[in-house]
Amino acid sequence: MIRLHKTIASCLGIGYSKGGGTIAALLVCGVWWMVRANGHFQLIMPAVTTLLIVVGIWSANKVEAVWGIDSSRVVIDEAAGMCISLLFIPVTLSNVLVGLILFRFFDIAKPLFIRKAESLPGGWGVMADDVLAGFYTNLLLQAIVYFNVL
Image (cartoon, rainbow, N blue to C red):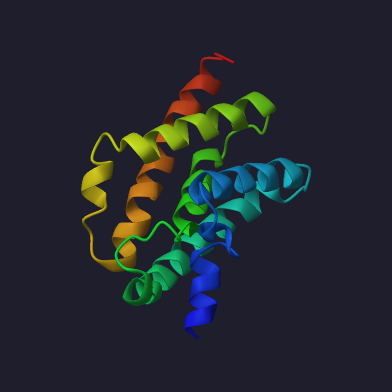
């Protein structure tokens, strides 16, 4: 069972790569771009994002005993955070790229209580900082879209 959790937490092994968090976020951007033409896209992606968060908390809890607290191999948090960043945003190349840049900024710099969110126990802390980074990114992207900045 731990092998399953390692596979999930590392996003099918991406977490074993150097820069795994960025690679996972890029992968989400690519998937987002490819499935945007699906007629049910806006209905499916919130459910997919919620599933990633729930499964991410569960798997991060399980692998913490093996890999340690908030291991860099756990990148499902970056995938979920990137999904949150792009929810309900028109899928254009510029929006996706700006979303990626903003999300990675918030994820790395950890301003606005993001660092504090990491102190939650187990998988909650692993996921919370990226969920919050995705939320802040989404708020900025919503403003960018609303004010037609791009």
